[in-house]
Amino acid sequence: MDLLSLFGLILGVGSILLGQFLDGGHMGTLINGPAALIVIGGTFGAVMLQSPANVFLRGLKISSWIFFPPRFHTEESIARIIDWSNIARKEGLLGLEIVAEEEEDLFARKGLELLVDGSEPEVMRSIMELEIDAKESFDTLASKIYEAMGGFSPTIGIIGAVMGLIHVMGNLSDPSKLGSGIAVAFVATIYGVGAANLLFIPIATKLKTLVNNEVMYREMIVEGLVSIAEGENPRNIQRKLEGYLDKTTISDENEGELL
Image (cartoon, rainbow, N blue to C red; front, side, top):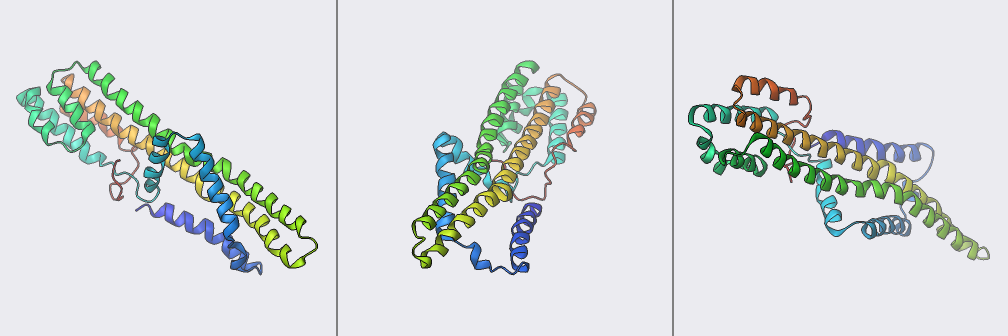
């Protein structure tokens, strides 16, 4: 689990609530059902309207990456690639056929199958990078739905504020109804601005970073397989791939899986 995300969320929301308490306010004043309905419902409705269904659903699916980011076993993958290289040098590329059948990573399996089929290195690179680019584009679009939410929610909050003030102005003759309208007005604004800056925009930025990390990891796989196809020395391949260790920054200890 990504504890930094959890602590960041707790710190951000907790600081606001603690500040409210220290300033003499009551926590209950920040809880308002109508305001939450306006902001959350309006924001999600706007994003659903602008997004294709597959992109929206993908965005919901990868939201789990915030707390359970994908695992990139970079060191283990480098060791596996070196093993593949040694097999290819000793038995030829056809010796990787059994390895390809047993490989669990579908992306790496595809590359191994291209190797076994005797594909030219540049053809391999082209095919695999096309898949990387397509997935990167799709996942980046999915992460941008949260960026869109960060843009919509403050505006929806303002709409809620205006609706609350309309309610207040319509009940000036009845002081007993003024409080609820004013509460909706101000709390809706807090919900909109707070959700944008504490949730949606940070989530979008983190997801795009994780997508980039996955791209770097897969590019490492491609580089390794192409190097095998070119007949490079296993030791030189290892030196080359170790350059990716600092770039794929997600720790192997995290609990998410590639989706």
